[in-house]
Length: 434
Image (cartoon, rainbow, N blue to C red; front, side, top):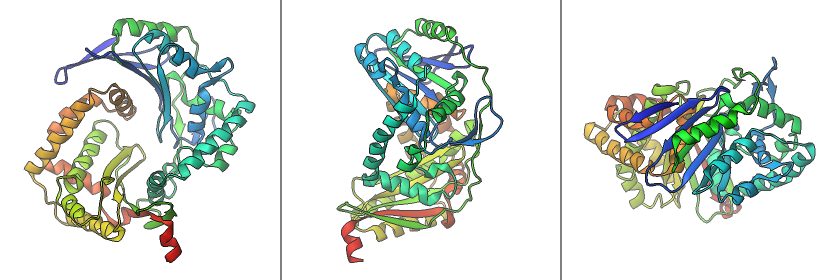
């Protein structure tokens, strides 16, 4: 077991790679009563085309299968896993993203029993065609529920506008038609390929003794047998730089229009330190241009173009990246024009200097340090960083070394009118009068 000491943050992180390839990280937190544990596979909704473990030919599985598999993992021949966690006083959950599937629990007691439950249920799949068919109705209802949520439709509508071929444009849950095609055989194929310990990471943070916990996990894993790990061969289409659609709209039962401007990123092939620096550069640039202390925000707020729902964000993973800016607004045309005008102005002449960078950097570092008091934030973000060959605890040093030129260089990735799209969710009454 290796001990990593981050003096600047006064954190000690313990790491061991198990014989089966599983990476285990343990971060003890003094003064904490709760422990949070995540068991995550580097497998998400975009991983639909791949070469199965032991195979030689690519297969394409139905959309939404990673999320479907997450649901099915909790159902076993002897009952529901949630009951086992509840019996030990733990709160358990799971989620599927574009690139990850995570299983997790939080508890203040019975830490080893809950950890064993987590490890065992994720590493013991049980699927039958009968239970798969039953789950289709449950997930179908979930899909229908999200279809009725305007903010969800706004978000995925914007992504779908941006991407022509990349599977990131597909809703994580898939569609009712796509999940109807899922079989138990599909689930086993995906499980055996992506749930190998060598493609997974276990993170424990909170009130924990690292030596005892690592021994417990090691003993658990040594009792199990796994196939020899193989590199996973995933396949993604070549995605053009320009957006798929310049604009699109949807009419729903909303009182006020909702608008997002999406910016499709050019640079999506980097990993590791270069990815962290690039990502932070764009995040800081967006804060300068659209943050709550920016000239844009003051003007947009005073003119009534935005409300408390106003937000902006940047997402970057290997193979795709995008920024989103928008708000609920009674003046969608004015807001869209203002965002595009601000982007054009910055593209033509970079207006920010060292004092501007220092201000947003301090804000970003302050947010990060506060977030380190959240065991959930640490576990989820550490795993996401690790899967992209980055180190969460190097974030502050990287932020401290950022220059104005770094921000300018990074922001070029989301510049250009051909990379811009607009998606709007509008009140149904406007459709009736148009």
